[in-house]
Amino acid sequence: MRKVLKSFVYAGRGIKYCFKEEVNFRVHVLACIVAVAAGCFFSISTTEWLFVIACCTLVLAMEMLNTAIEKMCNIISKEFHPAIKFIKDVSAGAVLVCAIGSVLVGAVIFIPKIVHLIKL
Image 1 (spheres, one colour):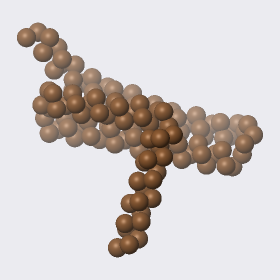
Image 2 (image 1 turned 180 degrees about the vertical axis):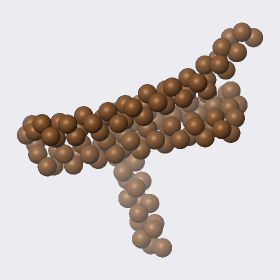
Image 3 (image 1 turned 45 degrees about the vertical axis):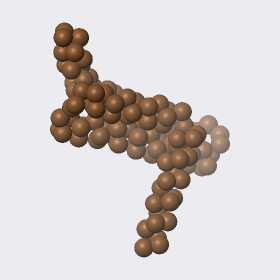
Image 4 (image 1 turned 30 degrees about the vertical axis):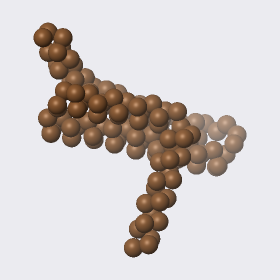
């Protein structure tokens, strides 16, 4: 049981590190807060909540993986190397793909609700 608790502590440190040190992580956290607030305001359905939660989780997890990959690459070599540049670019690209997908999901969920609100 102690090992399980320690693993949660270590994971919490990782989340705290990303929040303190990574601007993009904080931007994504803010976007998730806005999405959750909008979900509450518009009383979105259970299915819509599943998509919002999945998108927020995916983007935040990918941002954390991207951070870990970048730090690992920096340990491997401080000098420019084309392969490390490729790894970092692909890792950042994965975050961007998730973020774009999440924006599209948000648009599908919230634009009709915003339009309906404006028409009232």
